[in-house]
Length: 509
Image 1 (cartoon, helix red, strand yellow):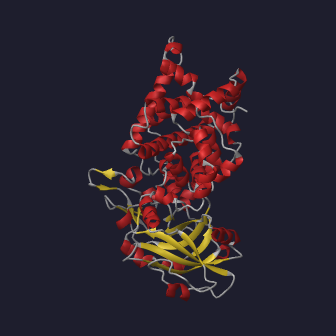
Image 2 (cartoon, helix red, strand yellow; image 1 turned 45 degrees about the horizontal axis):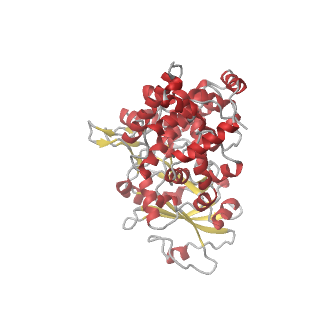
């Protein structure tokens, strides 16, 4: 079984690294000699020992993964104990190279050689790695490292089997998972008095890959959620079959798990469930009063349909889209939560797709038709809230400050974001006034959505996108409440979010 471990898949670990004032990836400057140690484990003498002798190579220091005994299991429910990491860290050197996007079948396509990997048992209890990166093969990565831009890496390992923390079942493939891991990964199991996660006792690490901005992971998850009988589904089926111990194909853990029906933390946390139930209640009220005789005399109903639909229509400009996708999702969502901002559905479609014109697509318009009932659907059917919810979590201030692009985001976007996406009363009023003046709601607009409803876009695809947005909204409100206090989010907030989801007119000039 192959697994991929993202550097940012454990928030506790990321917080510890940030608290130590370190970067997850560092270019070691050697031109004038080694000036300082890279860490407690990687000292000056070790850096001198592994200094590249070829001018075409540069030395990169990576912080890999932490001891789960110290930091807990990661987002995919994988556990790597300290003693295991200490014994197996050397396999990065003996079996691994540096690649892009886990295209690791052909060593000739590697962009770097792993020269050193070790576990630090006395200090930060983590694996650290030294790589000779090829300046020519990894020209983009080298330039980004010199400029201090964010470089995201993840690691691949192969295990003969993993082991359930609760029942002890050993599985060679995800398809062989016990009920604990298949349906309760990451959950507390009352009968066992422990959490369900997967021990990885004998990992062989064979790949470190530079991966694109984590924002693309969200789009990738959506892509697999859109598997409805087309080419994507065929590819997914192939990937599932390939995710075995004797395969050369490396499948992202979350994707492979989802394709095999494994629920990664499918039970909402208490705060998430509370927010979801409030949103579902507001959504139901809006639906009930829509055709009521007292609609225009009911202040709450009138607000829902008179103002709230226009509160969340703003889009991202092209330069704004580039900027928000240049930072880690946790940085964006964390900074937005501090300012009580929630992306509108059009902006969300732009963000996850990377396409500034996404709101005009039949997919987004058809998804908008699903939004008016999305929270009730999530409550009644327990749609897979686990699939993406963790991807929308805002990072702590400490972790956000480690993102090299955070300063650009704060300086060039966040003030505008408050005007466009704040859920506080005054910015909402200003947006509503501005948009109502500009917008008309003729039948032609509704006609566009009716055409979308009749388009070849499948309902499953549209529902998956709408569900992802619903998950994002729930998580965003939880993060805002965590930062602003429990009293900040009130019934008016839930009405506004549900009311905004009930409108179809986001394709204005």
